[in-house]
Image 1 (cartoon, rainbow, N blue to C red):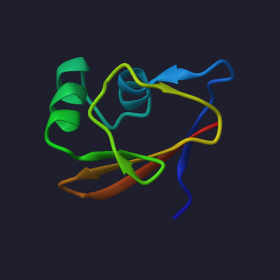
Image 2: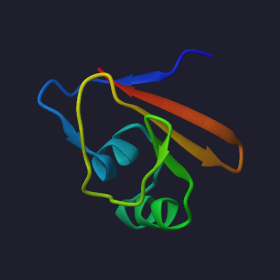
Image 3: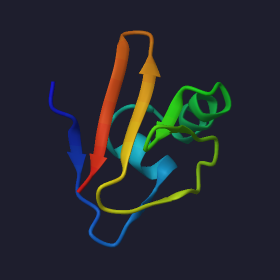
Image 4: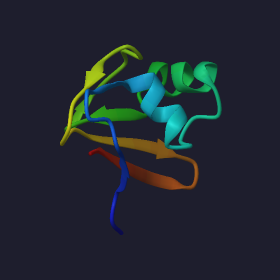
Length: 73
């Protein structure tokens, strides 16, 4: 399946991307996903909600329904 694409010409913070893409219901949910080690950025585990993402970065979130992938476009 093709990854979702979130347009962010000037970059975006990881927590914002999780909320905008619908992978996290709130900032608290995004924080919990990161704390539980459910998020990777470009194949590496990430726990910083404020990490700045740039075009081409790929975020994968392990959800109970399966993995979801989002690319920053």
